Image (cartoon, rainbow, N blue to C red; front, side, top):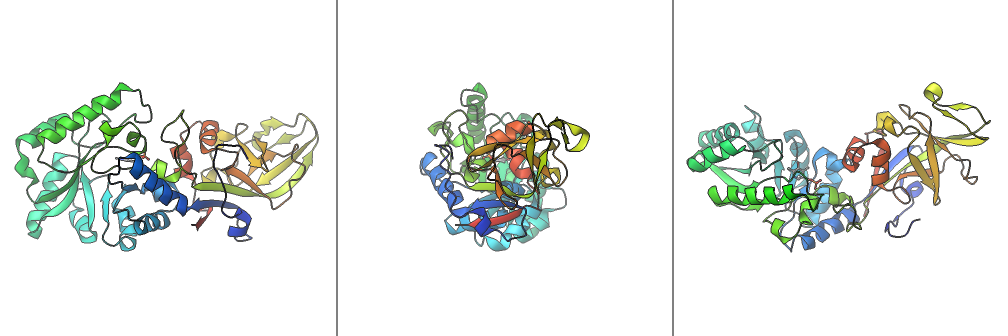
Length: 377
Ligand SMILES: *Cc1c(COP(=O)(O)O)cnc(C)c1O
């Protein structure tokens, strides 16, 4: 196991998973909670929310959110109302905010479940304020100001219009004014400072309210980026918020798949669909039960790898829907039923992302429902 990864499996996958499981994602909830605490320290002791959208980046939102709630986390971000509805009964008293905003006509659905919309346009503000007037009581929401991502949030002209007519917010309890950084994982990108300054200006012309700016990497941009609430997702789950520097987070997940079959192939024999890999020598091939239908990206064909007992097994041939093959020729001790590490000790998430030609975020959020989740800690 490489030094420095800090990965100490609390229990072997084989112990934690049922005998019939072919692929397992083991989630260390104690590590997630520890990461949340570390992020609080990095945020200067100020409050830190948990972004648990997309099923907590694939780790299981119900279990992750419940563990963080028990540890004292009071604010949770999801993308959609449906994600919020699933978590509402598990998080009594907590604020749950839906980042994707308010869809026209959905006001009462948000209010009934006490999910706060993150309002990102004048139309959303007006609709939420009108719903509060109809209900005869003020309704909480967050206000999203776009400072350079140009995705969601009030664009500059709508921000100016709102600042000129702040009574449009009457009936809305502003929990936070927030914005989102476009390039926070690049500490030296001048876009960060530009967005920080625009956010400060926006907050100065809006009615006073608590502020929220930094995502995972934003927390590590320094005290200028600290606000009343940070919104990390990735770093909670062990992803490195400071690429290029040592990861300050604890690894929180381990993906492994079992060897279903082992076979010897002669030199010159082809492996997998369309024969994209030809054995250059007499080889021993391990087939595991995980494929692109599980979100194990097909782009890893002939590029990815697995790890067993500290040894690297190159991924050979095409990743198929339910199966992937690895060259186990140099790992004679490997047997049917053994677990290959696909993400974890010896196989960092960043390397998987690189082999798949995508980001670590996409690798995690793509992991499908057939992969058995096992939570501990
Ligand atoms: C997803 C998201 C976050 C969390 O970002 P990470 O990089 O995972 O920490 C924070 N804020 C908003 C608006 C988001 O969409």
